[in-house]
Length: 460
Image (cartoon, rainbow, N blue to C red; front, side):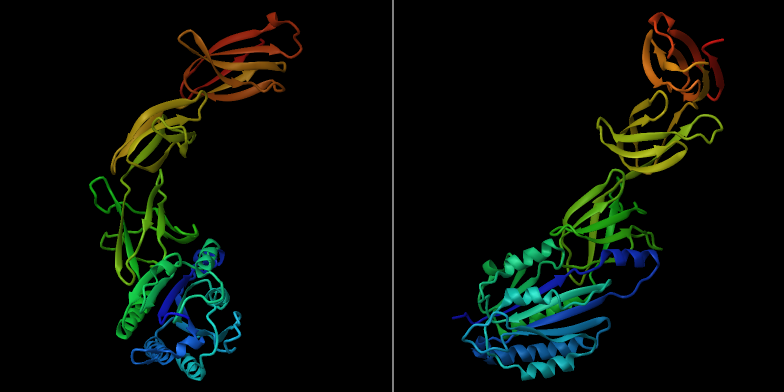
């Protein structure tokens, strides 16, 4: 026999079509988000039992009627009704006894109230199956926030597992963890795996908690992200922030950080139910884990993101550009590839640079400071035209301290090649493809000057 209890479970269902949302954003389309609330009402036989001021079914209906009246006229809110345990008498047990009675529609509180007045408790309690079916009750919508409020006086009776259903759907990104409000008994152990549990021991407590939960669901939850500089002030901005639902790893929001007209971080709206993981796409990326919001309130999210600038330059008046690999100091992973004659923003710290010149040029332990532009300048390469007269095998080497450092292999099927090289002393070593003896190797030394061209003929 079931314990006498009333439980309210609220599922926040994330059913955003990410591709449609992204397309609308690109096209400049925007509209107020619609909140859709589906009430799942327990009409199993045990709801005829007595609880405080009357029968459980009557108390639940009356409280729901008051709630419906208060939210019916709200803008951008739609409500619907699913009922279970009302079609088949128990016994025998019918675990498929669940039905969407009133689909979503604006201002349809009167329809839901009229339907509830006709409901007579008869059957069993198929909670898990009802939740599975409820996931299909929400028509496709690109800008909707969807909730389920389950009102029941007992736990699962059909061998279903609400926790397993919840976790399975969360992995598919269908809905998030619910609020669970239990009345009369402590059901924390039963519902911990489903969502956040709240206890209400009296009829008035039940009413108060119900209103608080719905208020949190309907009222906007706002936040500002403080990107802190080296002095702990929220001055950093103009970078994208991606918010992931930590439980199912689905992308929820992308916001380009902005300072408002007062120079403060702008306010954004977030669904309060998920626990978020936020990635701030600075270079390198900054991450903030396990962000939990206070529903219906303004939240401050602070993350250290002090940044400075790196300007890469090339000497001389030239439009020539060289890519440069940027890495954290003493690390091998590439953070960015930045071209010369450009400025890029980086998190404060030390970096190693590798210019993709011939030969490659490395600059280590470059310091990036808060709001300061660090300039790194490299010499402009010179141009070398190499003529071989015949095809063959050859390479260019840099001469350093009486040692040769390989730089470049000549194309074996070409007799003319143009190569940009950093200033320095070089040597080219070549053998014609037709030559069958090593002694026919040709060797020439030459010097490259910044911004100048040089012609080298291996065979006069």
